[in-house]
Length: 160
Image (cartoon, rainbow, N blue to C red):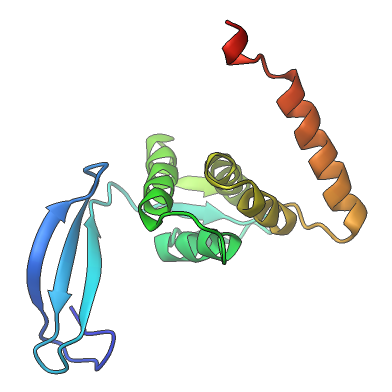
């Protein structure tokens, strides 16, 4: 594993343990050259997934791109990294469990929106604004009104 600080190819694993959801291995590493410490995650990839864009173009699924999108939506939000990682792993598991190697970008977006909705409301709206291509303040207003109506129509579990 290459050191992200100095680029040295020879790093040492100091600690390995499964993540909370047991779907990956968390490794603490140290670079003998510069002394830098960093964490890596190792995951099982069941199959190669292709994302079918709206244009029809097919691109390989990129977990890092998904994580960057989620982290952009979560920028400056106080959400624990472990919860974010669990949500991203959950989205990947959902995609892999669909049983198809070609998945529409809309499906990916819906799974991410569901995950963010349970993680952080602001990040959910941020992601939705890009995913749904909001172009004016009225788009936000309509989305939030619709979201509020959806929340009010759900049964209140405390009443059960």
